[in-house]
Amino acid sequence: MPAVHFKIAWPDGENQIYYSPSTVVREHLKPGARYGQAEFQHIIEAALHAASERVRQRFGYTCSAASAELDKISLKLRQLQEQDIDGSVELTAIS
Image (cartoon, rainbow, N blue to C red; front, top):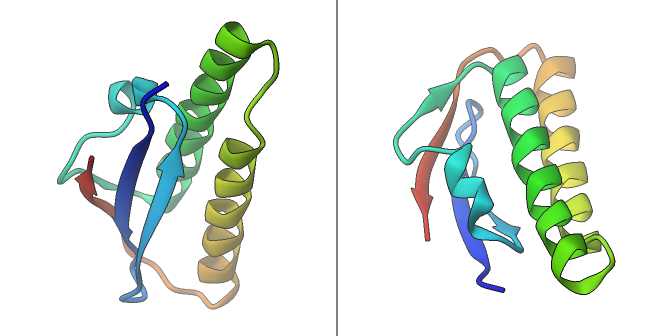
């Protein structure tokens, strides 16, 4: 199953690369797109759940790596909120 990596530019200036076990995330994420933080949380949850479901359909079990990436992203979004850092999340690259 082809994996996908996507790079996020966070509103605090941090850039981070994340992993998806499936290309299905391309249906949810668009390179160069900017998302509000709440909107991004919703979109990334849908994307990584769909990717994990693709793994389940093919191999019979969900992908723990997709869940771990979602946990990392959710933690980052909570930290931004706790620090009162507003601004959009930008998807700078997907490969």
